[in-house]
Length: 359
Ligand code: ADP
Ligand code: MG
Image (cartoon, rainbow, N blue to C red; front, side, top):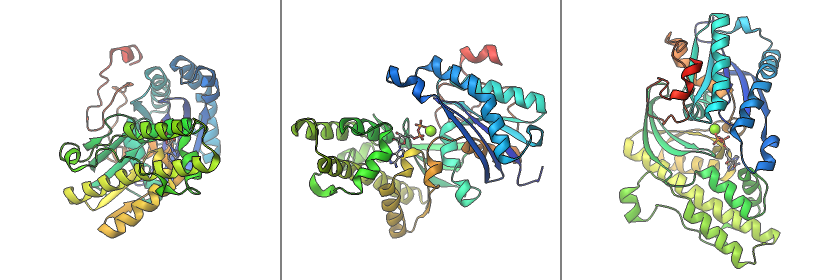
């Protein structure tokens, strides 16, 4: 392998998308994704067993597609990385089993990656190797946290997190109340561009002086969601198109305001003047613009991944393993799926009994 530019295959099966990505160093070569979202639609949510079966069926075709797009053979790979958690355990096991099989067959090292760390690591596609320490704002459909990151592979210190809904979850729930399709984030982003955010001042969770004392870096979005629902109900439950735009803009302003304020406060208090964004909500146009402006004002260097790299993908999994590969580590023998894996838990041990039979 080229010393600094290894060829790494990333596998992502934590939920309903089967992703296989290939990176050479921090350059993206391929990102193949198959989604089972339509198979879950009639149940109103992701059915774990259906997702696991879909991963099984899609794994080999996605491996072939990724290798074809990148114009590499499996034997060219230097390492295999896989999301080992957090996620649906049956779904994770399909990816973990595939990674272990590939590692064994090819005689290459295998790495278990934390999905949340991977969201932060994806910025490397845009800006090259992560500059650490950095403060990271991770805002996705399932998680919202502020992190201090001395080393994305080994030391991540949680500063705060949402006490209720994740930011993306709030976007999705509010979109549903407004009659917009799922996932709601991109729709609210679009509608809000044409709406007047000043028409209502929605609450900004945990930003009062009293709340800041106890929850300086925590978020709360459920009160905001209820406030939106109340406004929609007061309008008869079916807001007209221009009302949808105004509510979307005011809601988005409230979310963005607390995300920006708390991120900058974390940079100020920790003295770390770098901020990295990750997760699907980091694709939000208003958040990106507001964060960029605030960072310029505060003298903080902002690392924003490309919008298309913010949502789940498999390339980020390969990128997250890169430093460990360069250090010569290997999880091959001990790799197992973990349904829960809090960031900041450095252990890579299996920890859950139901994956034992696959080890
Ligand atoms: P997870 O890892 O939690 O499954 P992702 O990191 O893929 O999720 O992020 C998906 C979430 O991001 C969804 O809740 C979606 O609504 C939200 N999202 C995607 N694009 C945008 C956007 N432009 N603005 C706000 N939210 C967005
Ligand atoms: Mg994700």
